[in-house]
Length: 373
Image (cartoon, rainbow, N blue to C red; front, side, top):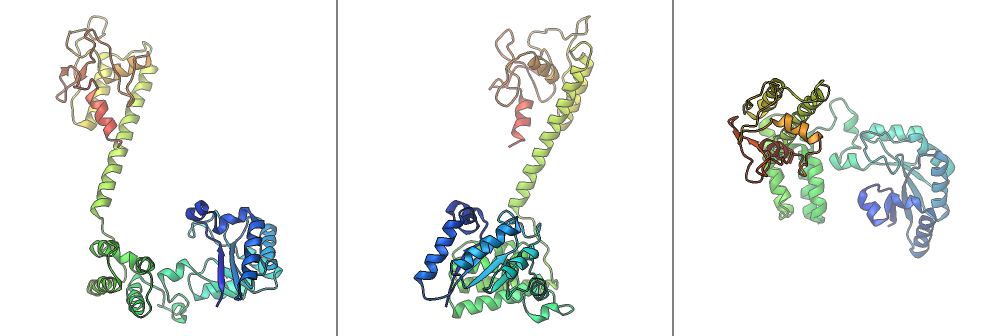
């Protein structure tokens, strides 16, 4: 028997709870915890830590844990901030430095994806043993000698067979269902991305060991029938909806960029205002994305739009030009005009001039805004 004190957890829940690797900010507290635990129990106490960026700080930390009475020290060769295992390699040099500085057994952890990795870590650092976490969750046979043979690499199809074996063992040795569900997803998760109906059944949360076993047995039948060793992930309705929202968001951004480019063109013009033809051209470019046509505006001899009573006195570009001169805007950015009747002109979907919508907003501006959400 023994007690292991895990001071290596870097997750946010550990930050909130002030435990794991976040106790590295209070080493006197860590020393007191280890010391009092060792004195209060009659079984060995082992401790796992992460490294500091500086080797000297890591060695001092390890020596403090040894001084407090730990029987074994495990060292993960990544810092607290290096949580992405695929982006950062564990620093085996730090593990070696700790091993050379301590007299108690030291275990190494990090970069272990197969038995050969474990052998390489022991050879490079001199540690007394090796730990693996993430790799073993997906492949419980990680340290099998067969994994080092040609063709012995783990495949998703192997995960199905091991998951079945695991669930049958759980029938004889009960495990909390929260743990079972997590292990099932790690072992057969790639296939559940293809067979989403079985994934939803397992995720429902009401299945016991037998229910999970039946779901994975059905998965095994489908995998054998496919004749494949790797799954082909399906796109779920939820993912399709998410992709549609993202596409709409990108279209709205493109529309905004085109409008900003048009405004910059107006700013560089010599008159400071758009001519009727340029206004119509900009409207046409904008309307192309919405499927509407640009309105035409009567002009006077100076080339400026005439006030035709109920006719719109300017297109969206003119509205924007007014906005730059101080016309108030709503919280979404659409221009609120103060015309003779106290209302703002709008544009109908068929391109004709009209009054404002019921809420007094430019319908096209509202539509563009709604695309963002």
